[in-house]
Length: 235
Image (cartoon, rainbow, N blue to C red; front, side):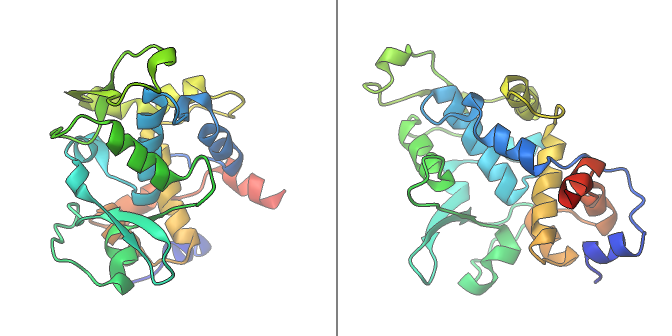
């Protein structure tokens, strides 16, 4: 099966795509107060952003149906911690793959020790602040005064985030991020995740196994880089 890069090289990518987030905007969004892990709202937004960027989750319904059991923390052969999906519900692959093929089947998110924005640390902190036996993964934050956060064990309610809330979450984040070049939607983050997998050298079939796309045409609609990304790469 030909790679996405080959489609671009041969000029065959004529699909309508969602704009990929530029590297400069991605950095600004990552460091925006809207994704600060020291507040309940910032923490859940950051966890959502990190997961979307690494696993390219499909649609609001797919995110709505996640639970803490959907994820597994593991270590690689060098002892580095990473997060992966317990199974890939997009492809209904419920068997436990070996370590060698985990990247292709489910995606992965590695820890960055010492980084205050480490995605695995944020994930673990989020779980520690959620109420026990919560039915879903993404929960609404409790309204807690900042002065009481450190002494409050539970930061989130049992109320699940709705489809509309999840569907507009990146737009809300961008509205609070300063200096970004344009407003982005959830589709743009999925495009960014797909593009990063392609940049890493994965073939179409491998990317599709992570993202859940069922055909290359729909995958390419998320992959084609925006003009701003091309220009940024030539600077």
